[in-house]
Structures are given as structure tokens and as C-alpha cells.
Figure 1 (cartoon, rainbow, N blue to C red):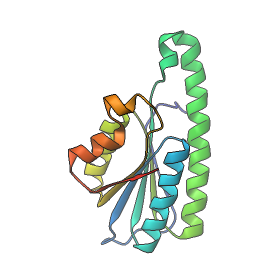
Figure 2 (cartoon, rainbow, N blue to C red):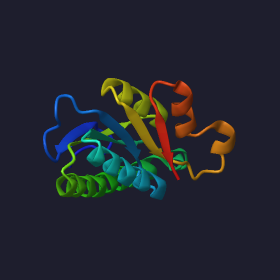
Figure 3 (cartoon, helix red, strand yellow):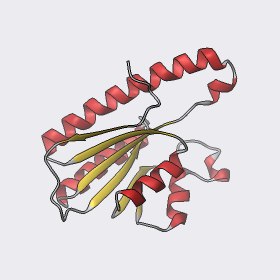
Length: 157
């Protein structure tokens, strides 16, 4: 069994054209993230772009309550979510003929998405809108990405 918090990179679908534009989308399994992924797939397909799907695993607030129990639970939940997302992304890439790089990594979602977008020279970043009330005060990942101003950011509700 692989470590759920170990970085991996998989490629699905056809090979991208060397001149293809790049769309990066962040996914976490939430409804808004899955809508963002669907939108990004459509955008990549229509624009003959390659798609970089980035899944950022991060520790939940459960870890502070009971580190040993939370760690086992989180590891299993993250591994299941990654496997489910990987299957869905592979199927969509093959069905739609979109070249996809699926990246799983661990850390702060904003930092990882920002660094991933810079590394793959993304032409656009697509993320789902935050559903957490506290983000109105602290700022969501989408808001932070928009403020960084490196690339156009599309926020899908």
C-alpha cells in the first residue's frame, strides 16, 4: 500500500501537442471542485489544451484531537479519495480525448496550486468556490490565487 501523503504524477489520455496551452484545475472531492474539474475538461477539450489536475492532500482538524486515530483515518480516506478521483479523471481523459496530468501532493492548497501553476506554466487556473463560511474573513484559496495575479483564475460556483 502506498503512502496517501506521498506525491504521485500520472498521465492519462492522448499525448499533448508541444504547443498546447495548459489549464490547471485543483480538486479535493468537493462538489464545487468537481464542477470546476468538469468545466476545465470542457475548456481543455474545446481549446485543444492539456489539463493538469492537482489533488492536494492535507491534514484535517481531526489530527489535533487524537493524532494516532486521526492519522489512520486520514490515510485511508485520502487513499480512497485519490483512487476514486484517479479513476474518474482517467475515464474522462480517455472519453474526451484530453491529455491529462494528474498530480497528487501534500501541503497547503494555495501554496501547492500556485507552485504547480508556475511549474507547468499554466495559461489558466480553475478552482471551485469555497463552501466554508470562515473563508469570507480569512480568504479562500481562490481569492489568494486571484490576488497573486500570475494567471487568469476562473472560480466555478
